[in-house]
Image (cartoon, rainbow, N blue to C red; front, side, top):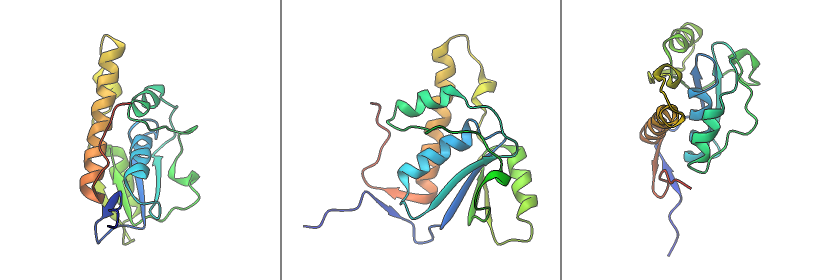
Length: 160
């Protein structure tokens, strides 16, 4: 009996996806890492920000909880990417959405808006409350990437 693949992609799978947020320090790099885990390796996946921010170590923490890592991520802008053409741009913040719409006005690029809360805006009195806000963003990204781009068979969020 032949083993089922770890994932099945939709028929209309894109060849390249860009995740964009304001500073490429929380939401978009988190989405990039999750998408690279969920989607086949032949899809080119990157992330960028409208402007470059600073690395956020809470992102590393919540990704490690599910067995993922953000390898030496340095926040970057679209201008800093090697390739600047994408089939799909997923924007995760209002400023990124407006930027992507303006950028792609005369190009056949699908721009999708997933307005996710900035976990730094949630606040909290304890480290655990702050991490919960980051976990909520991580889990929402996982669900949305899974629902839009892949139909996984065996991948589920598992805490290590």
